[in-house]
Amino acid sequence: MKFVAVIVALAVISGCQGRFLFQDEPRSRWEEAVDQFWNHVSELTTRAEEMRDNIKATQLGRELDTLISDSMMELQMYRDDLHSKLAPYAQERAQKFNEDLQLLVTKLRTHMEEAKDRVTEYTEELRTMVEQNSDELKNKANSYAKKLRKRFNKDIQEINKKMSTYLEEVQSRASQSVEDVKDRLEPYFTSMHERAQQKLVNLREALRSQAEEIKERLDSRMQELRDQVEKTKENVHNTLQQKAEDVQKWFEPYVSHIQKQMEPVWESL
Image (cartoon, rainbow, N blue to C red; front, side, top):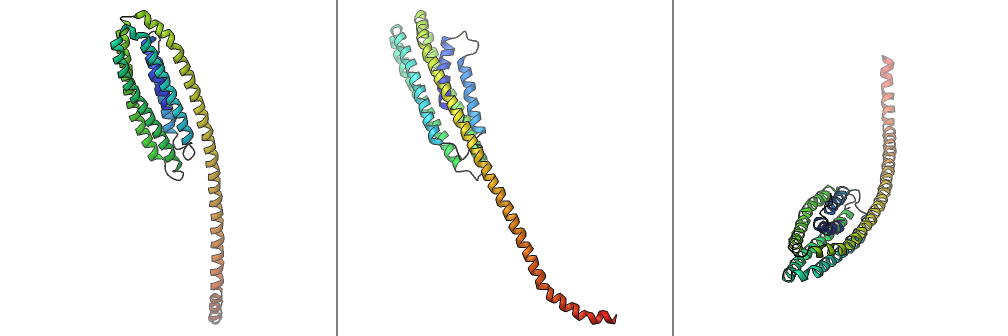
């Protein structure tokens, strides 16, 4: 599972910060966030069978709702602060930027909500597949993850491009103001990153606990099946033995009768 909401939002905001405000960093936070995102997506899709029948969709749904809300709040704070600090230098352009960016942010939130609903849907499907093969669901999850990656990458690129164009234009008019904005916004990114990391830790712990519980249940179920098989084998053995004894008793009178009839013949020989 690991989720997609916090990682994508972190990728959006951290990517904007790393690409536009911290050009000198050898490796951008954008790249690190994308790596984390796909590590968690990969973990969720590959562990689908192990986690079946015990993933708490309601709890994960609440976690994803919280992550989406936090991500949108941080993105809104970043946008508002950026707009308020730089708008005086390009008022008309700033208004257009604000409107365009709002459309992109709304689309990103829609995709994040859709991703949350799809994750919840998969967990519900997993809970109904205890005695079934989960390969079909795993293939479906893998296929959706690929589509989701393309969709989020497109959203991120659009927001990234919009901010890049706007910042390049404004920076040419007020480079000092950009430095001021950088200093003001850095605490937002740091705080958001810390909260996101803590939520990821909590989610990992929840998944680990659920995985252990699943293992215990599966072990218990397997032991029950072994006991049932042994009991069935014993019952079949006893039944066959009883049937053999019954057949032997049924044939004994006929064997005795034939032996008596054959005795004169043997004596004459």
